[in-house]
Length: 359
Image (cartoon, rainbow, N blue to C red; front, side, top):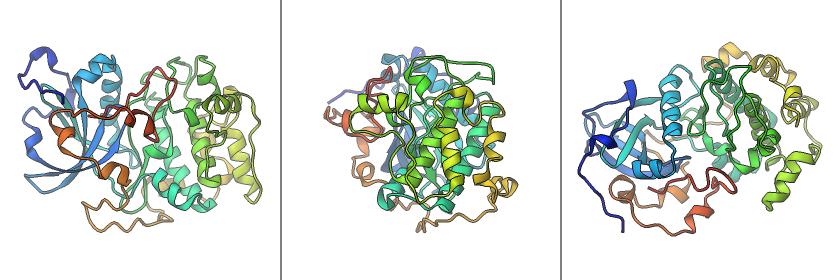
């Protein structure tokens, strides 16, 4: 069992910027359930004792962040959260606080379930439903790009549905700031099934990696598996780099054309390479979408999660909710090493190996 050192230390303080609430503390909340795991931490459903409102609280262990030298990523996530309140399809940060041991981000509780969870249950979606989700995600990615932020980890696990069925993009742990249209970066990161070829080749890459990610997610919604999937990771990497895109029949030519354009192995030829989000918006697959109505949430979602109330966890994967809450909030319990590889979002062969900190 890990032991807590409850003595505060000024050297242990993290500058949380304008989101910081120096008066907040863990005892302000009743922590009810584990509801997710992000790139760098665990997420808990919590009820604020002061007003009985429900929040998702992301809990990060400082010593793990320092040990893995992930301070930059945590600050990038914090910075993106501070900016994301201005967009309808990005999760919002209410405030953050810290103890000597941990960082806490108090976020919107979004309880319509992960897109991954719904896809697992239904195997695939029809084109109208896939189009709706893809459009809302594209809008969020376009907004991040307008702030010179590349998301870099687009996958169904990071796309939540809210209580009405709208998309909410979450987990900004791998975001990279300062990437304008002419800038590239080189960090090898992401999740194996959704990596763009240029990332795999360890070449400098730009914001078009996110449009590849959008294509991979759309493909999975349409066909039930990521586009180049294999149980053998090295074979999957080879498929991503070299295998032509397979488009089984029975789908419209418009979705096929969009997938070919987004999953173009040459980044400079990919949809989005020239005019970014504008190119995606203008594709024929989205001809029936009024983007202004979409942004203002005036398009009725094709699926209603029918949540029973603000604390409903029916759409949260039981893999999370069956876990004990206590260790995530207080001391960090020992955990079996099998957990590090059993998670559906576990990283394999990365500079971010097992960055999912089981707090």
